[in-house]
Length: 523
Image (cartoon, rainbow, N blue to C red; front, side, top):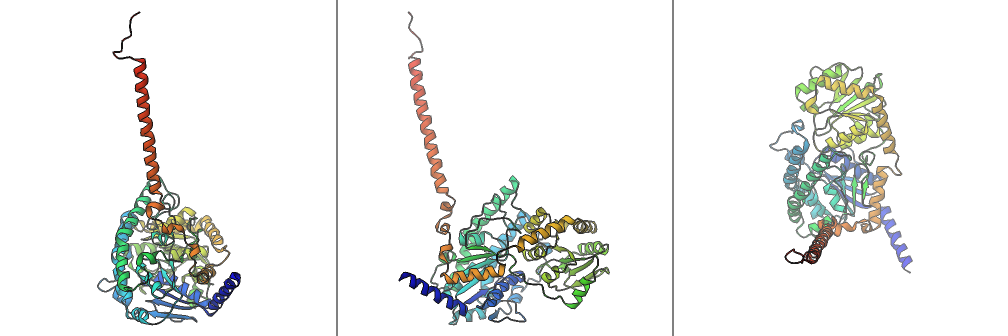
C-alpha cells in the first residue's frame, strides 16, 4: 500500500514537472557580468519548459519562450547618482585593498540594494500580487535580505555564485573551507601556499568571518525584517533553508574541493554553441593569416579609462606585432592607433574566442572571460585589477597557460615581451588546450546539470536529504573547539596529577634514604 502511494506521488510530481515549474530570479547588484550568469540560468530553465521570471536592470532585445523580464527601470542610473562612472584602474588589490573592498561592500551594498531593488515599484507590485512560484533562484552576492522572497512565495530557495565558493556560499550548506589550501577569493593565493601565505590567508578569512557574522549579517537581517515583516520564517531560519548552491566554476579551472552534495559546479553555464560572427569581425579574423590577439578588460573595467601612458604603451607594442589585434575599446576615437589594430565597443566574446585564428586573449582575469578562454583553448596574458581576478590569473600562471602583467609595470617593453612570450612559446597554447579538453569532458553539460538538479529539488520537496548536518552546529561545535578544550583540560589534569604524584613519591623516597638531620649513626 505504501509503495502504491509513493508511486502515485511520484507520478503526480512528474506530471507537475511536465507542465513546467514557475521560477523567479532577481539580480539586484546591477553588475553586467553577474547578469549574464543570472540570465543564462533563466534561459536554460525556460528552454527546459519551465516558466521563468527574471527581475533585472537590463532589458533584453529578444525574449525566449516561457521567459519574462521584470525590468528594474532606472536602477542603474539611480545607483550612479552623484558618483560618476567609476574608474576601476584606480583600485588596488593586495591584502589592504581587498580588506577595504570587503568592508565597503559589507557596509554600503545591503542598504543600497534594499533602496534600489526591494523598494522598486515593480518589485513592490510583484510582492503584492497573487503570483505563485515554485523556486526562487538568487545570486549569493550581498543578497541575503532577498532570500525572504522564497518564504514569501512559499518556494524552494536555490542560490548561485557567479564565481566559485566563498564564505557567503559555504555557510548556506555547511561546506568546509580549510585555509591551508583554499585561498580567499579576494587574495591572489592558489592551492599551494607558503607558510606566510597560509598565515595571511587564515587571518584574512577569519577577519572576513568575524565581520560577516557580527556586523554584516545583522544589517541584512534588518532589511529582511523591513521587507518581510510578516515572514513565516525568521532570517536565521531562511539562511539555513537553502536547497542548492550552484557555483560557476569547475575543478579543472580551480582545484578539487570538499563540497557537500547540494553544492554543484556548473562552470561555463553561459557557454553555448558558437554563433556566426558579425560580417566585419568574421572578415577581420578570417583574413588574419598570422593570427589575432584579442584584448578585453571586461564589462565593468573600461579600456578607455586606461591612463594615456599605459594606453600608448599597448598601442606601441601592438604596432610591432605581425598579428592583428582586436581591442574592445569603448571610445570610437583612439589616437595613434596602428594599422593592425581594430577597436570595437562590443564584441561577442565567446563566439570570437571560438575562432581558430584567435591565438591570445589579453584579459583582466574575470571568471567569465577566463572560463570562455579556456573552454576554447586560448592562452592568456592577465592584467588583474581587483576582486577574484588576482586569484584567477595566479592560478592560470601556475597552470602554465598564462602570464601575469601588473598594471603598474605596463610599458611598451613589458607588454611586447609578455605577448610575444605567450605567442611564441607553444607550451602556453598546449596547456590551454589540455585544460579545454578536461573542462569539456563531463557526463553532463553545465546546462543539463542545472536542469537536472533544479528538477531534482522540485521532485523531492526541496531535497532536505542533501543537507549537511553541519548546518545544525554552532561554530564551536563545527570546529570541535569544545572537544579540543575538554581534551586540553584533561591533558592538563593528567599532567598536573602526574607531576603531583611524582613530587610526592620523590619526597617520600628521598626522606627514606636521607633521615632527618642528614647524618648517619657511627658504628
